[in-house]
Image (tube, rainbow, N blue to C red; front, side, top):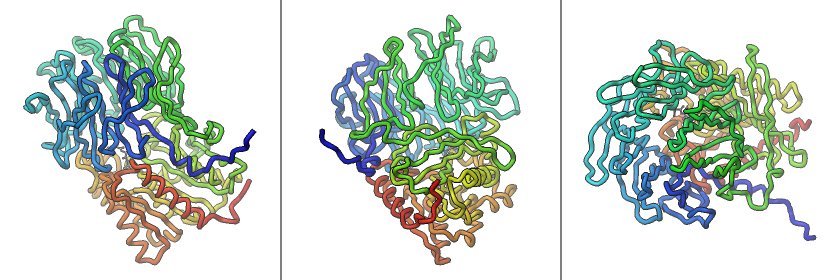
Length: 600
Ligand SMILES: CSCC[C@H](NC(C)=O)C(=O)N[C@@H](C)C(=O)N[C@@H](CO)C(=O)O
């Protein structure tokens, strides 16, 4: 038998992602957004399992995707090179030129909803109300438009329009941990949770009859549960909660009156089915660790997009009690065993709070005894069991990775998530330091030999740890991290600004804290080699955040490398950029790779 060489680790970077999908009403076609060509586009397959054909050529990821109920056209949302100014286009399901249906430069458009006859498009937009958004009803054949909802007090998004278009569900977003859902029935506005001053979220709601709404909320609870609101009697009822699990989305099967409920349990997801008429609740075994999307076709057939830490994202169809894989996204030449699955570990933080983390240990044959601390982005987000090609690339090159879900992360209840608010550089920083001390105590890392790397809030945390605890590290990598919380607060998208006080802090009232929590306060102590990566079009953490820290460190004569990606936003949407940058990151790390690193 021929002996083949081991796969080149560079191949790890070539993995393909599927980030969204939709199934036609007759289930004969399936459209999905993938970077199979290196850049994201929409592709389609005629089911079952035919050869994929390409529908778009704009090389942009799709942010919204919905079929007209009769399958005559598709509505898709695209921005340009990461600017997050999403515009809506209509496409014929089998390809051809796209038609702009909602297009105004420098505006942000959200949440498109088609009327059941496919004649009208409802959507929320920043165009006349950049802070709070308005919602419009656009007549697709004539272009005539009416304003149906004027946002005020909090960013206001449409969520659903009833079949007869007399009832609208919409929500007001005040912060990631404070939101409300309303139903507008005729002229009446109905709040779907009992009135209270206490902050809570309502993250999802669906109309299951003209008078019945099911919702996901953590009203008077730590973890989100399923509740029901009766629009006639105005009664709110808790329906189902599961200890230590937070429900996330609801997908309604109208044909069979079943609600599918996705839930997060720490670093994994769960899926449940709730039969509304029988009151039956069932756990559905899923073929993956994490669910990206669940969709139900008109017939009631369930489709799921999901993946795991050693499993690329794929779409599955429910047949009987089995999941049948309908895409074959795989890493040619590699098996699951070639990848590293993380261990889920917990460690006590400075104040005794238990922190969960994903610990990716480089395989013995690769291990160089190097350790990367990876604080995740968000910060109200979490490091979970998703496939991460970059992690696998570093692991194959001998670097272990420790990714803690510090306080402020999602998946551990509302109170835990709130712990980062107005405290960006307080508890979460010390949770990261406790992670390092734990690794050092266990013999996995050596003080002064650790690399810290992160993106977004993870980039911010890398900068802050560098400034305040440089003695732990030998090199620092910051990908689009805010460097100064004052300038960050003023430069985020307009529709985020009303949430900045609750989320980050107030520039005057919290002045002292914001100085303490800003990495730019600690320039003098940032003495280790640093690599900064930034997308030129990033609207969340604008380029000036990276420019200013790079300039200040250059002035001090520090060892700093700066990479700007001209055609990217907040992260990477283009494979060639991602590969080029992470090759450079590896080169940078190899330059500082220590001969003295602790091999356990
Ligand atoms: C507070 S305004 C909206 C914040 C936004 N929330 C939603 C629902 O989109 C949010 O949390 N975004 C983060 C994922 C994010 O982009 N964070 C950036 C900015 O800090 C990051 O650097 O991590």
